[in-house]
Length: 373
Image (tube, rainbow, N blue to C red):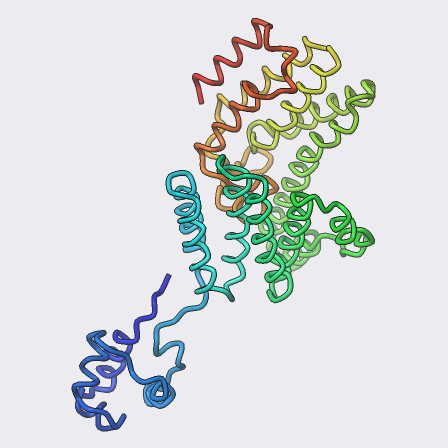
């Protein structure tokens, strides 16, 4: 991230032109002492001199003052991680104040704006325990404003689509389901077929076979993970119809096994097993509920971290990439400590599993996950 630093620019540009401070002063119609103060940071050029000074050095005013309204992807990732840690260690208002200052400085950096909104949801809404419902609603509304700005003004189609998804998520959190329906109803079938297939065909036609395969592998990967990710909510709609519920469980378990979801992206499987356990427990099928919990505990106490896309024998061209989860995953990124606590709570403090609490097998699993996470 670059701070405004006009003094350094003036020094560098003056030296590039092999000028003395006095020669620059004569051209600008100021004293040598003024130029010296500019270069040492004791004062700044008058605002009316900036166009003349920028023109003299043949640069823009933004370049002259060292102002960079965009952040690199790497900077955004580092900043996100830094702020996420601050949310867990510093006063909430202090961190929010810092976030707002960053937003003001980089208001036209849409990838950053989107990630600040994601940060607000993850930490302001989901993680900070001291916030009341009014405060949570306020931070969601603020996040939504950022997403709307990205949707309205970014020229990046991927950012626009992600922003739209997040706007809808905010509306749900704010208790506005009708707004979500207005956003998405009628949008079905209006999006063209996936770009990945067309891009893969283009790579194939130009002889880039590896690139063609990699593009489709990533698309297959994403779609399988998305299907598994939908199942917990679908199951919650089927809890009262045990036949449908069990068939959904059977098909999802087979999908997880067939595509080795536990190995390539275990985080995608744990929500399913938690929901399956809760559904079976609610219907008194305790043995199957415990079987589902056993799978859950095995996954989260195994090779769960770091949360990342992982390659295997089939997805050999999918790069192991935790960074990719930052911008596109349905599971919004949080720090590892918060995720570990959420995984423990999914067993130990889950009211849907209350019918299992006196069961020795359940108690053993609760102890195991608590001790290992």
